[in-house]
Image (cartoon, rainbow, N blue to C red; front, side, top):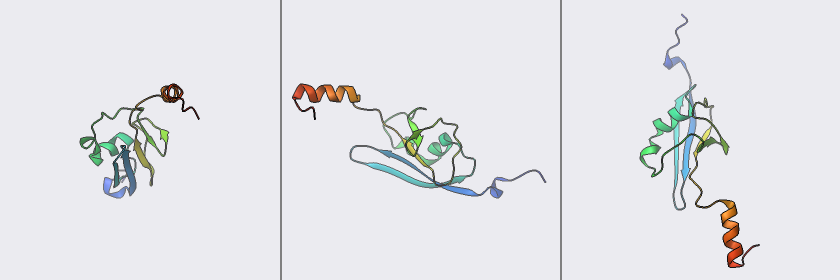
Length: 102
């Protein structure tokens, strides 16, 4: 009786999110306890809705970058980060050039 079926493993609720300038994707879903971050992203179908490739290092949970193989906990919010349009240094340089450095 050491075999545990997947139906015996309790499900957990998580959220997958991605934000663009004018739109947010928030997908609430239930996954099996023990699901990895990348598996949840794939199960959510969000990759099909986005115009960027999801790369390890561009995902996290509650603002903390996490590797794809991270095991999820109940209530986790997976965040997919988009590339910066400009680095903070570049933005400051632009403000200085315009005379708006405050």
